[in-house]
Length: 196
Length: 196
DNA sequence: TAAACCTCATAACAGTTGTTATGTTCAATT
DNA sequence: AATTGAACATAACAACTGTTATGAGGTTTA
Image (cartoon, rainbow over all chains, first blue to last red; front, side, top):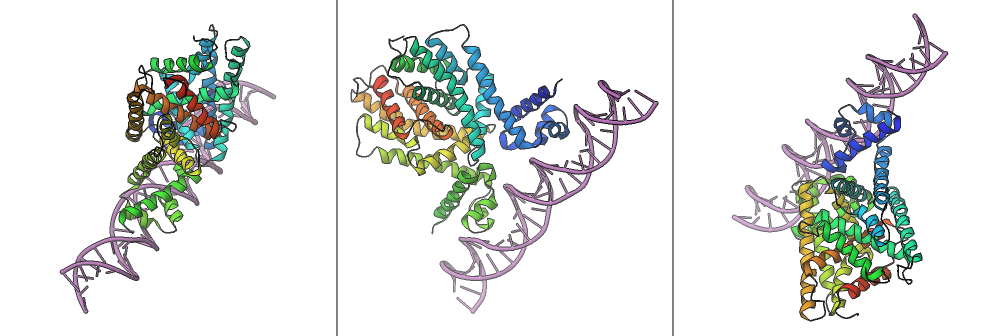
């Protein structure tokens, strides 16, 4: 097993502890115990906790991007856009965990300028994919010409993020179908040249 | 000074520490130091830290509700709705701090079922105000009849929450004007019987 | 005036934290 | 066969955590 794979195993263990017990209870010892070994493993593959935290945070972006790219295969037009945005919705357990870990890190970043900057970079990277998608839709004459792709990408991502949070918080929030329906409505009403 | 007022002072000190240094660094001693006294004060007015945290969290709901009610005075129609939703947008420093503290608590609630339930209750309380507003708009024949107030309140709150988070994360996100404009567009395109 | 009480300071407690140094096992290399 | 180094385990360290007991000072009450 390569070194990078082992680092991923540590990170995944950290994820599980975060989801189950919260980020502030995710200590070196708790992670080691989750892996079934001692802290020697954790300290061997990560210089310190900060490096581990950062690595685990980067995994959020990685996984989200994978979901975005996986969803856009063999789909075209506005369905591609909806598929991309669906990466952020809690449609299955894996995406629900991503959401939880992401939120834990985001709350943890309050009062930590450096960590908040990391979130910025992550968000910018993912947003770029949406912007690109919107530009292609515009080039294909499917999107209204007066739409600014960057602005609208922000609004769209804000919408899906909000829907996800709503799912996490609210007991009787929108169902998965209603979430995607809401996005479709938004796209149809505001972005599409002709209703879809 | 009454006992409740003193509890509020402690809570406000906690808020300041949370915003400045993060929730996990908000210890009893840090709060006491922020107040310029010792931990004796904190332990005297709160049985334990959990009670203090809960009190500080309730303040989020309180402040948000005050903003919602303050904004809806002397406004009517759809502007009332926009004003209500603007309570969640980071339009000034106070609302920005509310957002930060709220987010810190939300991330902290990951892996803590009890705390997440608190957020549920808070969100339900605030959502009820939006639902009521939508119902009144519907009764006044301003809102499309096929709109379900509860579903749409969820979507609206998700939207504003997402926009707020976006502001916190993104460097070049929507400006305050663009945020309110986006909400207005959404309301006009999807909810209004006639474009406003 | 004396007793009760509220408000807070101080200090000690045990538990947990990240970090570090050292030791051990075992496979790969020379 | 000797040596090197990777992959851990173990243990100790100081720093920090929330909680609690004790006591001081001042105000109110009896």
